[in-house]
Amino acid sequence: MRSAPFAVSASASLSLPHLRPFLSSRSTLPSLGLCHRDPTFSNPPLISCCASQTSPNLFPSLSPEIVVREARFEDAWEVADTHCSSFYPNYSFPVDLLLRLNRFIGMVSGFSAPPGCTMSCLVAVRCHELRLGSLDTVFGLNRGYVTGVLTIDTLGEFLPRRGPFKHRRKGIAYISNVAVREEERRKGIAKTLVAGAESLARKWGCRSIALHCDSENIAAIRLYKSQGFRCIQVPENAQWPEPRAIPGTRFNFMMKLLTN
Image (cartoon, helix red, strand yellow):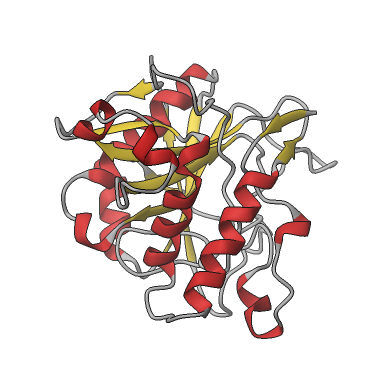
């Protein structure tokens, strides 16, 4: 089994009754702003990039001030903080801290992906942070350097099944857990993250990329359409898998073909 460090682990959830609805694994809920999927708390995996790595894996950027790369070990707390501040902005101490700790523990505890599947967490960081070195980042002195996060995988968990035996589809990347810090929104960071995800999907050999978006999140739908995604009509009475969310939430299933 291919192991992707820093991902969700069932043992990582805090056993607090009043938090249990937020700590279920692989669950999804749309949110406000430029974030979609998972305010019911699934921990996105972070593909391993050693903390000592000096040359981060960079992806094409639409902004000269923002760079997208795969998350590293020292990014774990920033990723947790970015996610929670986007999806749980109204929680105060101590619940907000417990949510962040749960996500942080889940990410560093590890997650085993099925054979042939890949997963990664991308982070958007300010360019000048790359020149500061890793010391301040490792010890959390440079708070807020991660401006946005995104998860991408080839698990096929929320894609329509193939054939009578309901096999999971291959060759399709899936985007989830898109979150941008509130003070950093409307700066093209979400577009830059999506562009980075597309670049990574091509490296994986994927022929298309997909996502679910809250049908009432008009801003997010407009964003994805501007990036070439199209809404896919779900056949009547079809039981396509969807992320788990608040009852009554409706999703748009969107896809984009990846061309070389």
